[in-house]
Image (cartoon, rainbow, N blue to C red):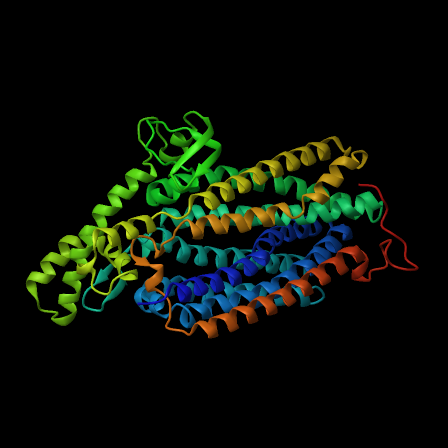
Length: 524
């Protein structure tokens, strides 16, 4: 059996690299459409300030993109190095969207980025705008295919286990492509990226306005970011509601853990705002609840119940017992593929195969599982409630705080009085980290909430890892964290450097930060 330490270190390594990578991804996704908006205005009006805006914010986008690619490549290699059995077991399905992402989206994105930076003097205005649009499309297609792959891990549709090959095989590509969980994750994640890009531009623009420098440039950037950010954060909240519904349909355990819902409540269930969670006794010592809301989010009805953790565990216990039969029949088929009796038994119980495999964490032969071992496996089917509960609420709280900020900023742009509101500009500056914190927490809730599965209900995490030494994992983990920390420091240094230089870094002679230059007129 695989040691718990090996599994934990493998999970920690993947989590660390993914969290670092996801520091760069949302900004890449979000800023690229702001560049499209800015360059579109330049092409339509011919006003050179909009070209300068596209080039300057594009420079910061390019720094972020380069480091995002560097950290992202490692993740795909880790499937083969650290999660070899996972790659073998589900590679037919999971590998397809990743391959399409590399062939179709990543190469389109990378090619267009090169043309974006080196094509200003070689392409006409409409041609360069087309390059920027295709760059944005490529960026979003990359996110689409990656999230289709991840959505399948959350809700494994369009595939089934084959006892002939002893692995999962795709049965319906279109079901994988149009997986409701994947589609909800895609629109929710890219909207969060758009919010991140808008907050980045608005925060830095606010700093320029507080310093009274490059005012015409900063005011235009602030206006675009405020409008785009308001639309984006509204999308995040609305589509977050859709994500909640898909979780309620496909991952009831995650939903119950996120809501600290220990008991099944009468429909429609209320939404718990805050609670005193007592995991030792599996109850909440106290809670503040809004009636009906969770039922409407999780079921889209007032009559359907959302099962609580205790009822979910009882159902999982039955599935584990059935899974023992499935695993036993599968092992008979592995020894003799023509065993008709074993095949019939397996077909009857294969839906619970993954639950039977949970016992492999404790016993080699699942038929030897005692009631105590089965109870351990049952408890494993529910992740820890406290980090999911509070992680989700901090994420949602930040989302509504950003909605308030973008709403006030957009309203002030309509009134053209945001220059007279230093408190608003300071709030925008101090809120700069908020979307990154929310995005990281969103990733944590989605991935930690899926435990103990790599493929929900199909393949347990403890069976997915490669056979590696603990020392090699400690070494590679330290190496990754050290290297990625250096990359993050480099990114922060470059971002701060060019943000402080402002549009003067373009060397056009039109901005205040340049010596012996005439600045752009300060009117909006």
